[in-house]
Amino acid sequence: MSLFLATQRFRLVVVSAALLLSVGCVVGPNYKQPPAPQVPSYMPEHPATTNSTPNLPGGEAQSFAVGRDIPGDWWTLFHSKPLNDLIERALKANPDLKSAQAALLVARENTLAQRGYYYPNVSAGLSATRGKSSADLSPVTFSGDLAYSLYTPQVSVSFVPDVFGLNRRTVESLKAQEEQARFALVATHITLSSNIAAAAIQEASFRGQIDATQELITINTKMLETLRGQYARGYASELDVAAQESQLAQVVATLPPLLKQLAQQRDLLAELSGGFPNQEMPETFELSKMQLPAELPLSLPSHLVEQRPDIRQAEENLHSASALVGVARANRLPSFSLTADAGSMAVILGHLFTAGFWDVASGVTQPVFDGKTLLHRERAARAAYTQAEEQYRSTVLTAFQNVADSLHAIKQDADALKYAFAATKAASVTLELTKKQFDVGYSNYLALLSAEQSYQQALLSQVQAQSNRYADTAALFQALGGGWWNRADLAKN
Image (tube, rainbow, N blue to C red; front, side):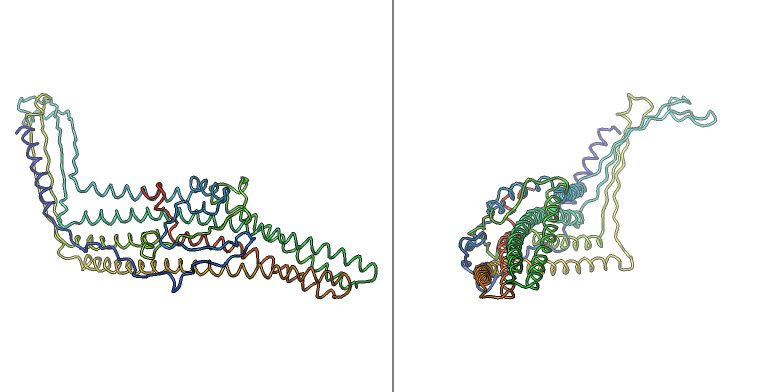
């Protein structure tokens, strides 16, 4: 038989296999996307506008724009060029982000590799043999020559028709895992930008607390000098001087921990941006050089499940678990195989395409007894689907809690700053009046010491209240999904 005829039979095998595949069914449940929760709002009553504290960084009133979209570079709303520069640099250099990108590529290639099983596996080979047969035996060739050369080109085709959808469900599961990896990349992106914003705000808070502490050191140092002068003139006791020295020492002692925290915060920012701690960063952060966003976009609750990458990851995990139920079910059903070989065998190269051979074979395998192994694997797959379903619901609930927590925090932060600022003003006035009374002898030192301590506590509380407004605003953007769908580098992955 000629090699041409063998090739024609090959084509018949491939066509038959494709026909068998087209009439096959896909066992297992068909995945259905969970509906969005029918929740009208994140909390019983949304605040329309927060309180304001005029003439103070971070004291601006904030309003909520319900239904407004979130920009992909939400951090620019703080109007801080150092923050913008640092985050953009980190998005190019952070190793966690690059690792997530590589993980997505791994998942994508695994999906494409599994798709290859949709097609026949074709391999080709050529062997050439030189030999000599014994004179006591019949010669191998028709010519009767004892020495001969044998050439054997051959093409082999094997194919496993996806009759019950085993491969289709496997590809479906891998595709869902690829989507999981994509949303893991999105989550890494959002977490990175949010962590940098939070760390920058914390650095600004430490700088504010350091400035406040240095102001307190100056106040206490001047007071100590005054007391020493009064002691020398006999107007103050040695006990008063000692108490003021103790007060100054206590204030000075609070400075090194703040400097340590500031240095460690700088180390954290260097690491997040993909650098080493010994590399000095050009960016520094102060609360007075940041602007609090006056209008906050607030996504509709029905959109949150589409925006949060952790919810999308949980959904794709559910999708993968659904497909794996079909895989486990298909493994209990018959599997078919088709194989075919075609080639030629000749002792003369010119005869290679005239002396052809071929064979076609098919097989079917049906599990008969396996100690119920496959049955229990299917049951395990169904239980895994239930587990993924509950994990999805838990993730949704946590996401809504995150948004509600951020909204509560933003409202209370505004009130806390208003009261902290009022307390600082009152403590400052009290301290100033007490100092004047002490200087003229109308107030004792204990009253002055109490006023100093009250002002110290109020001033530091005010700085922390300022930074909380910035930090919780950034947390809201993260809780709402960070606007990743508006970034071309994430939406098209």
